[in-house]
Length: 89
Image 1 (cartoon, one colour):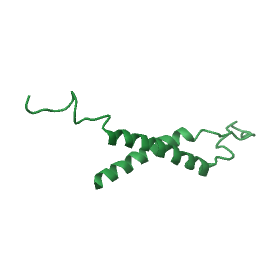
Image 2 (cartoon, helix red, strand yellow; image 1 turned 30 degrees about the horizontal axis):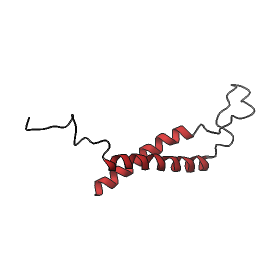
Image 3 (cartoon, helix red, strand yellow; image 1 turned 90 degrees about the horizontal axis):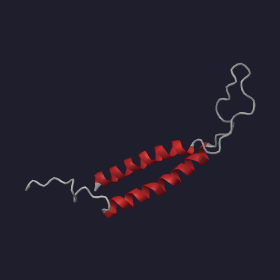
Image 4 (cartoon, helix red, strand yellow; image 1 turned 60 degrees about the horizontal axis):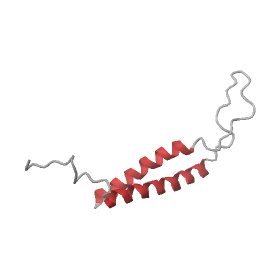
């Protein structure tokens, strides 16, 4: 039971990190005036990180819930099927 909770937590953290990288570029606008010397615009003026973390958390929760539902329902099972090891054969 304890290992299932840890596995579920690790799965959620991995999904959350991948989702964060997908959400980060949404809604960003470059700085209006680029640097005079290099022309580099740098970081966005208003990154709105709190909003992006909230969106990431919600999306990751939905994706994690779908993954957990598939795992718990045995739709994808490695215990049965052609890839299982049968010592009797």
